[in-house]
Image 1 (cartoon, rainbow, N blue to C red):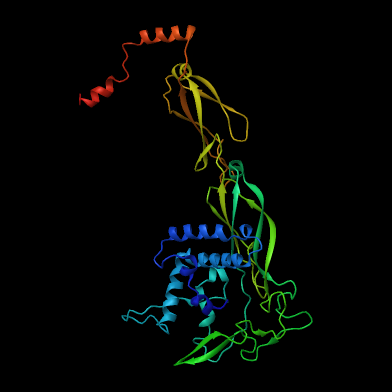
Image 2: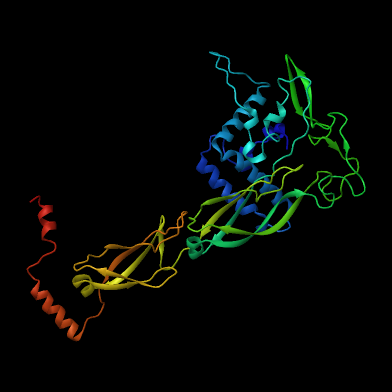
Length: 383
């Protein structure tokens, strides 16, 4: 896609957000649309697949603060029919066209730099460069254990790749494309613009540098086709819920020998019935009896993927006391593990009879002079 095509696209309209939308609003809207139009949820629906690609392309630009700013400035520049350079005290501005979309479309091609590539090189030509493949977005849901310890999961993805029928040439089998006579294979043409020469994509070959007279019946001359593939992806240990992981070079294949794009995987994690998580630490609530809390003792605590551990409960432990089992938490990036945070919950028996009832009555009589609420009332009265 040429730089001009990028500028003419309204990414805000694609996502359905206002131009002053916050990063959080853009992210929330993108996730909703991505789930709705994901190819796995719309099998065989070409329109949904194309919509998903447009959504991903729009989010790739608007989610990056620098790229979004340059995109807005470029659209404003084209709307005004020109651009200004940074002359002192004129209120003018300048920015690097070559950087726009470079993160997602690759350096040297596919950005606004293509449109202004010959700005200060009048009459010059530039050979069409390799183009980096597009980035691909997908989602995966892991169990709590997989998120803590890491997992290898299969991911089925649909992206653009060179057409297998014509091997990316865009020409029907038995024929070959010819060099565009207008741009002589460069993919861009220059035209006069005052004191400058403005370089823009060639309209005859649409920036490809080649013209297909007899197009491939599968890709209709574009040289690109949708490709579905399943790949095994390693999700690192210790990943958090809603974390976005970048897998370099696992996205769509490039054009003309360009590097492949990246794969971005958003991870969702199912809750665990016993354990919770706080950063790199795991959490668990353990019930204890009143005698254990009052007199202290050793309690046994379960761990996520290993044998139980024993912790010493100090005498007079209050309800809600938190103890720490070191090294029994989630795996960190450096291979070490966080801790298991154990919260004590004192359990009060619902029915007390026999010797237990007599013992509690005796205990109540023995501690009748100790009022745990006395300090509360003194504080309330300001004493």
